Length: 310
Image 1 (cartoon, rainbow, N blue to C red):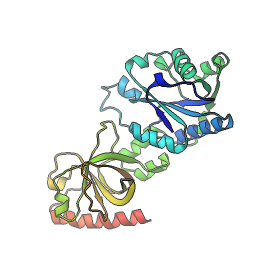
Image 2: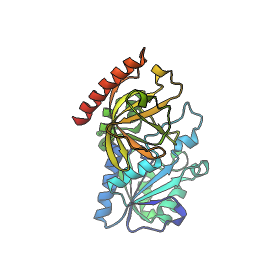
Image 3: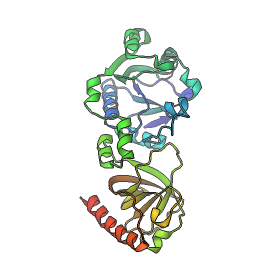
Image 4: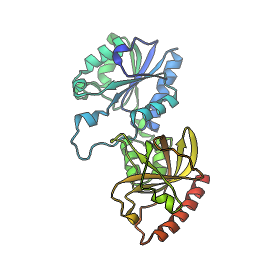
């Protein structure tokens, strides 16, 4: 897949079949749209194209709304997932307040027609674009002949039958229900971060951990607790258990993400690793003594192995 981050450098593509949206999570509903785009492009001997926007429009338009939107994907994660679906081109348009004022007519003429050379546009039933979401399927359908491209809408029932939304997935993750989240996504939910030095307490009690720093403040972190997980280091996957929270037994003051990677003792400080969440084992608990914590960690370890091997 070719990634385009500069819209001005794009030249019209061959029989471009296009869809657009934020595609946060690239979940089953999104995958249904992407599959249809790929099918149509192959049928017309054309190229499949996804237009997405970064940052997420809600972050730009409503920066002070509550605690802010938390996203299922960073841009790189989203690009990787879209590439796995088999899309030919991903066009990332920087979303700014200025861009948000672009009318639907300008978007159609300047981007869909002049830049991409769209031959077919496929959108979900509720998709709108342009200033104040003024561009609708009805407008596109009625004006398609003058625009010079076909328009196809994925019916409401087709998408609602999937029963999935990015909002629902965010809710399940914030409740620690990662098994449900993974089912909705059609892939394992993950976070990517750099390994940094911690206080190395885990090493002294037999459970050394890799402390993870996330560089994207908008990335959604699952609920606090202990998880069975898979950790990818240099594209090699290892079984692990992960703790998210404040480590109350040792009076932790900072919210941390720590991964104990099984049968692993390499120096990976400053390396980027990816954590795939499989199942929440328990909530975070404050123990009276370090010995009680050690006993529980041993139980967590055994349970995590059972979960990951099942």
